[in-house]
Length: 501
Image (tube, rainbow, N blue to C red; front, side):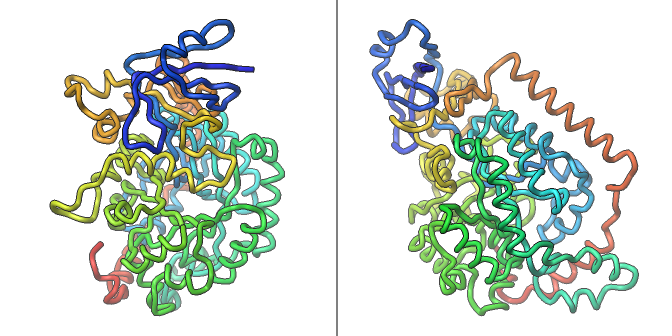
C-alpha cells in the first residue's frame, strides 16, 4: 500500500462555499482514504508514509479542461491569425501535421503545470485513415504528462466548409478557385458503421488505461451543422447502450444559430429536444448563442455546457451567458480549446477569463467566484462518465489535486481576511502552482525535473515543426478564398444572425 498525507493551510473539496483550515488528506493507492485534523495527521506520519506539509498551500481538486484539441501550438503560431470562426476554419490547411503524441505531451505538460488533471480531447486528425493510431498516440502523450484524457474522435457527414447555401457559394467562385475549393469538400469520409468500428478499435487498444481510469472514449459528432440527425441519433443509441457520452461543438457563432433557424425554423436545442437527442448524455462546447428557452431546455434535460471564453473572444464568436447559467445552476465546465488568451494553456487564467467575460452588464452582472471554481472542478467533471475523476476531494474519490502557493498568490500584499478561493479566481496563474497530483501520482512540481521536462517538450515540438515546414508545403496563401467566404457570410447571414452576442 502506498500512503501519502498532505497537510495544507487551506483545503477545498470542490463543492463547499468555503475553504477549511486544519485539515489533512490521507491518500492510499491513489484514493482519498479520509480527511483528518492536521494534528491527527502528524500522529499518523512515519514509516513509509510520505508527508507533504506547507502552511502556504491552498489544496483543491485538480481542474478539468472540458474541451481542448491537443494541437501543441496554436494556429496563430503557424500563420493562421485569429478571425471569425467561419473564415478561420478555411485557413487551417496551413497547419503542419504534428504527431499527436508530441503535441499532446507538450500540451499536457503545460496543463499539469497549471493544475489540470483531466482533459477532454476533441481530435483533429492528421489522417482519417490513421485516426485509431493517432488517438492512441494522443492518449500516450497525455498519460506521459500525467493527465487523464477523454478522447473524442470526430465525425462529420454534411455541410463541409459552408453551412448553408453551399451550392450558391460555389457557383459564385471564379475558376480555378472553384475547383480548388470543391476538391476540399468531403462531407462523409466514413460511414457510421466505420465510425463505430473505429470507436471499438480505439477502446480495445486502450483497454488497460480505460479500465484503470486514465482515459475514456466519447462519441464526437463534430458540430450540429456538420452532422445529420440520422448520425446524431445513431450515436446516442450507441452511446447509451455502452454507458458512453456524446460531445460536440454547438452554437459557437451567430451563423450556426442562423443555420438552425433556416433548416428547422427553431433553435438547435429545440430541435434536439424534439428528436430526442437532448439529455444528460450530451455536452456542448462553446454554446454561445443560446436563447432563454434554450437554457430552460438545457436545465430540464441535464445536458452539459462548456464555456470556452478565450476562444470565443479570439474567434469573434460572442460571449457565454454565464450569469444565467449561474442563476439556473446549470451543469457547465470550462475549456481552453487550445486558444487561451496568451497561447499558454494556463487554466487558472482561463478561469478568470470565464469569470470576467460575462455577457450581462451592470449591478446585477456579478459572478460568484465559487461557481467558477465548481465549473473548473466538480461541475466540469460531469462531462465524463465513471471512473474518471469527479472533481471532488472526499473519502473514496480519486486523489487528483493541486497545491497553490498562497505566498505567490497573495504577493506583494493581500488582506489576511481575504477568501483564498476568491483570490484564486481573481489573480492565480500557473506560477502559483507548486504541485499537481493525479491518481496520487505527481504530474507537476516546482524546480527540476519539471522545468526541464517542459523545456524538452517545447524543443521537440519546435524541431518537429521546423522539419515539417522546410519544404513549404504548409505555407499556403488562402487570402482569396477567405475574402469570398467573409463576403458570403456577411451578405447571407439573415436577420437572426445580425443580432450581436
